[in-house]
Image 1 (cartoon, rainbow, N blue to C red):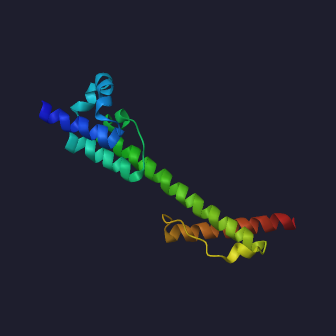
Image 2: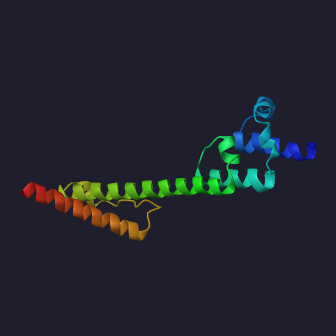
Image 3: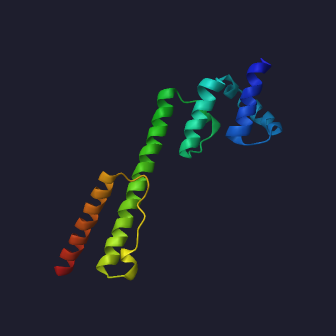
Length: 142
C-alpha cells in the first residue's frame, strides 16, 4: 500500500542514498525487492548501524544478508578498525622512540594518543617498540 511504501522510498532517498526523490524511479524498477523490507525493523536499524561506523555499502549488501551475516560483517569491520587504530598507535610510539634515540628536539613534544587505543594496547605497543629497538641495537653490535 501507499502508506507502507511512501515512507520507505522517502527514507531510502533522503537518508540512505541521499538522492532526490525523483531519482528513485529507476532504482525501484531494478531493485523492487528492497521495498519488501520493514522500514522500522530492517532498513532504519541497519542504516544507523552502518552510518555510526562510517561504513558505506550498497543497498543490497545493507539489506539482503540475514541478521547473522549482517552482524558478522559489522564485527569484521569493527575488528579491522580496532587493529588499524592499534597499528597506528604502535607506529606513533615507534616514531617517538626512534626520535628520542636520535635526540631529535621534537621527540619530547606532547604526542597525542589515538583515541581508540586502550591502555593495555598502549602498554603492549610500548613493549613492542622497546623490543624492536633492542633488536636493532643487537644487530648493530653484531
